[in-house]
Image (cartoon, rainbow, N blue to C red):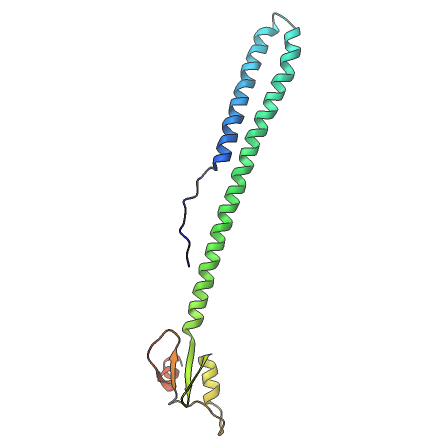
Length: 159
């Protein structure tokens, strides 16, 4: 059973929010830096207050932008993991389908037995005694098919 696929956004919403906040904080740091530069000539006392504020704003802005990058990285890893899981599921389903196409049911008297591979049916046919359960005339049906055929018909095609 397949689940409907949702489009995956390129940038998670939380990363966008952190990018915006980080950008605004860095813009504030630029404004404080410009104010510091203009006040530097007139008064040395204002610079001692503005410098720690400038440094803090740069640090916090960088922190927010870095956090946004980490969120985007985690999102990309999750997307790739999801794609890998889907590919593995498709491969497993294809292998199961292929395996089922090679399995057969067979009649022993009125009973239906199996599923078994064609190789198993060959080895059962090769038994040289009264214990042999199948022959070339035994009816077999490949899983998924509706038609029963003689074992010899399948053996001629696969040999």
